[in-house]
Image (cartoon, rainbow, N blue to C red; front, side):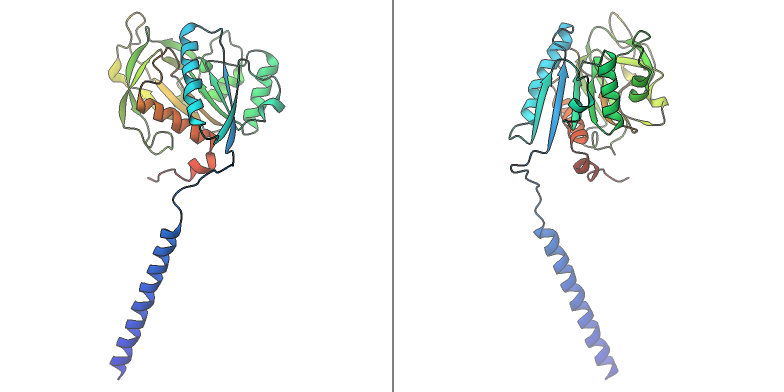
Length: 276
C-alpha cells in the first residue's frame, strides 16, 4: 500500500513539474520578439560638420549625413544638422547624442558648453579629425575626455587596412569578425596610446601586420587603436573619416551603426551585452 502511495505521489509531482514547464514555455513564447516604436520618437541627434574643412573630410561628412539620414527612416529618431558647435549647454541638452564629423568646438564658449554636456551624461560620437589635437590645441580637458595623448603620426596616402577587433564582448563589436579590412582612410596614431589609460576600452586597432603602413608617410611600428570608448563618459571615438570610401564596406557600416545605437539607445544596448 505504501509503495502504491509513493508511486502515486511521484506521478503527481512529475505531472506538476510538466505543467510548470509548459506554463513557463508558454510565457516565453507569448512574449513578442520586437519592440515597435510606433509614433514614439526614440531620441534626438545633432550632427555637426564643417563645410569649409579640407575636401576629403567634406566628402566623408556629406556621405555620413546621408548614411545616418537613412537610419532615421520612419522617424525612429529626429535630428538636426549644424556647421558650428553650439556655444551653450541649453542648446546641447536638447539632444541625446551629438555626432561630430571632422568638427570640433573651437572657442571658449563652445568648449565649455561641450564639457558641461558630457560631464552631465550627454552622448557623443566623434569621427577622425574630431579627435585630432596637438601642442597648439591647448585643451587639456579634451585629452582627458578622449583618454589619450596628442597626435603622433599618420599613414599617407589613405589606404585600406587590416584591423583587429580587440573584444567581441562589447555591443559595438560583438557582431564583427575578429579581423577585417576597412576601406581606405588616413589613420591617426596618438601618444600616449589610449590603451595605456585604465579608463579606456579599446575596441578596434590597426593590425601590426600592416607595418610598414603607408607609401609617402610610413608608420613603422607602435600601438594603433582606432576605435575606443572612455568609460567615464558616454562616448565612442572612431578614427575613420577621410575621403569618399568610408561607406562602401558593409562591415564598417555595421560598426558605425552599432556605435550609433550603443550611444543613442544605452538602455537597449546594455541589455544586449554578451557574457563571457
